[in-house]
Length: 126
Image (tube, rainbow, N blue to C red; front, side, top):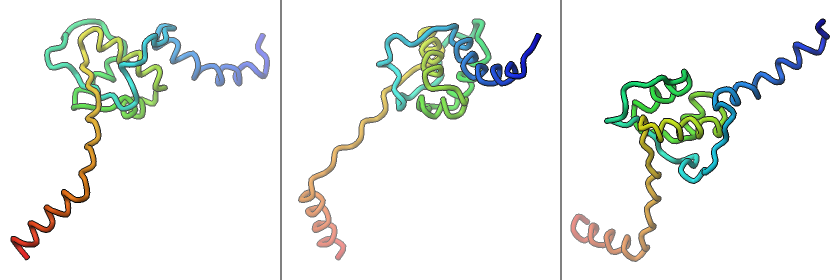
């Protein structure tokens, strides 16, 4: 016997069940390797065989084009960031992906150095 509330309950639980199923109920224990700006790409000499879930295959396809951040990957896949991090962690451990820390921001140059460069250019070409 079904109740009128049953379809509504199914709609509410569906978004919660899918991430649980995709990650096999796991959570990421050590989150330090994957921040939102960690860069990920497919490993050039990574394994070519192995059974991968459709979600993992999609991540590999995305990363094959070059470096993407974890945030970009989550945006392209419409998966929660936590789920993406778990899948990326699996693929990295299995050798399919490589990670790289983002390029650190450049340090600001001191103003007097820029002024000296400007004065030198003006003297030469001015």
